Image 1 (cartoon, chains in turn orange, brown):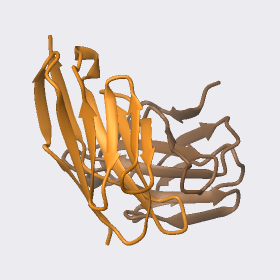
Image 2 (cartoon, chains in turn blue, yellow):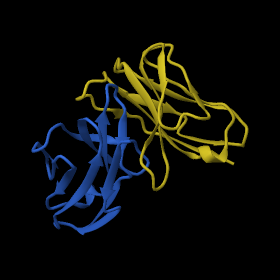
Image 3 (spheres, one colour):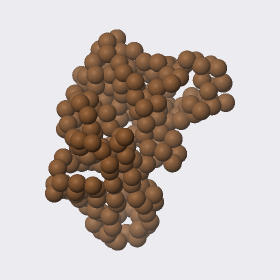
Length: 110
Length: 114
């Protein structure tokens, strides 16, 4: 059974304090690892897709990396508007099913 | 471009009542799916469809029915609501089922079953 574990469950940062969010996975045949951002009362919004170990993607203050067992979402010099829940998901198998982690709630204080 | 539209946004039901959560997308996406999100748990797949006329069960299908008569619409039916179905429900779609296809989510329906 595919498993996705995200840590920590919650993270509080001061504005400008860089950190990383972790997503570890146990799957058979990874077809893609996805990062989503979810704001309160809204649906998840796509951030990145990673496919193979060593791959990196960047968008503004966010950088996602992938190894054979885990992915990191690095946040550089975060701002209060980066406060959200960040979800990690893996795609395996022939169809489009995604298995999600429980998410990491990030709070950035001014 | 509306994307994925879910209605209603909020709903309160009594145990045993039935209802349909509506989902429509205007992106001509072949793949559509329903997830539920509960506190302390990840999004869990209820049902999905890879095209009109084709549906399949996800991780937590019991108590829910779906049909896909058109490409645009994918309603989720609760046959006899139970308190355990209190949750936030998200509809999501993607163009296809290839590895690089990302899901587009609706804004969710918050359902309370009393």
